[in-house]
Amino acid sequence: MDIEHYFTETGNGEPLILLHGNGEDCGYFQGQIEEFSNLYHVYAIDTRGHGRTPRGDKPFTIRQFADDLLGFMDNHQINRAHLLGFSDGGNIAMIFAIRYPDRVNRLILNGANLNPMGVKRFTQIPIEIGYKFAKKYAGKSDSARLNAEMLGLMVNDPNVEPEELVKIKAKTLVIAGTKDMIKKEHTRLIASHIPDSELVFLKGNHFIASKHPDEFNRAVLQFLRS
Image (cartoon, rainbow, N blue to C red):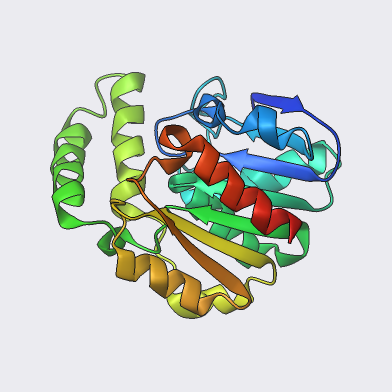
């Protein structure tokens, strides 16, 4: 691999890998790590170009991030793991579970989307406008290029067809907020196309894990232990 992930690691038991969202880092899961580590060996990873993980030279795409995750698991001799992904992290986990179904034990997709049309327009339109401006200045500096790439993830990725979701073999929890920036019907679409999936809506917006950790953790642990 052209990068080495920054990550935190704590706890014992089955591996549980946490994947944060766009522009964030593994600190997003500060409300989850301690509780989950009572039962699981928790890895919280900074995605390529996020937090303390370097950008590297490979493409800045959700599919590349999924392949990066495979490299991380191989490097740390993790044969199978539970995956919990939030937002773009959910998209990474979704792509990974499609591509490498035998490497996933259970899958939790929080606020994931198949394509940009799954995002409510009042949220997506400013992102698209910002991306157009960011592309104009991407050549000015590395930070400007990375800003354009971050926004590009939300404009150009992940573009998964609903029919591809049948390739997911892991028992799956699809979870989102009642006032999520992902359209409710889109979240239902994802759940309906993944075999053996469960669907849960928790009161709150896109950031239910950080804003309502008790309710979120309860739902996730109930699913993992069922």
